[in-house]
Amino acid sequence: DPGSFVSLIGPSGCGKSTMLNAVGGFVPLTSGVIELDGDPVKGINPDVGVVFQQYALFPWFTALGNVMFALKRFKISKQERLERAYAALKEVGLEGRERTYPGQLSGGMRQRVALARVFVTSPKVLLMDEPFGALDAQTRVAMHEILLRIWEAHRTTVLFVTHDVDEALILSDCAHIMSVGPGQIIESMEVKQERPRHVDNIGPDFLEARNHIIRLLRQPGGKDH
View 1: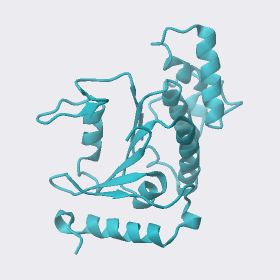
View 2: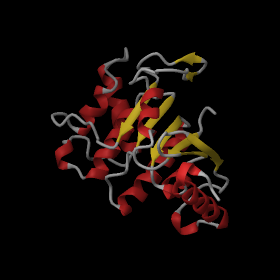
View 3: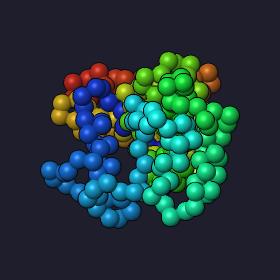
View 4: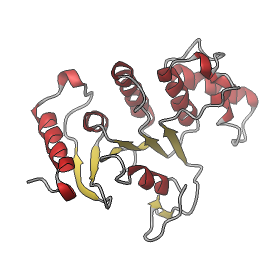
């Protein structure tokens, strides 16, 4: 549904990233059709934003320059690009760091720049490929809070790839579980716990869903016995 937060969860090598790349139009389909707003995906779509695990920032640009670069394809003035970039960096908590280069930022801060860069373009769909996988646990929790706050404000449709069950359940409205070899979606689960969610206030429904997904991922072919 438009504005929903959806996760793809599965073991390494099951095809999560391949599916995400297909949705983004980065790889050709060998069969079937993927549609976005009723139109088939036939290539890279400017209405789709992407955040990867690797930050993919230009090291020769400041944080501000990286975010402004994302707006170059829009027919807007340099002043408007500047104002929107400043606002986006403020939204991710990097006010005062605008003139800092990526090499001077921590991993979490670089990923915040990457988030600002994609949200500043107001994409209809945001694809995220294990964006917090390289971060330590404390930084990852902080990034979850930042991402959810921005998502609540923008209500961009998100497809989030992860192999972390807790991460999927904390972030998502719905989680699609994939099996390994051959990769396929074996179950879709609505996450019913009320927001905001945090590992410190999880309830029995969360634990039940978590244990069910873990059992699915452990069973050959994804069957929960």
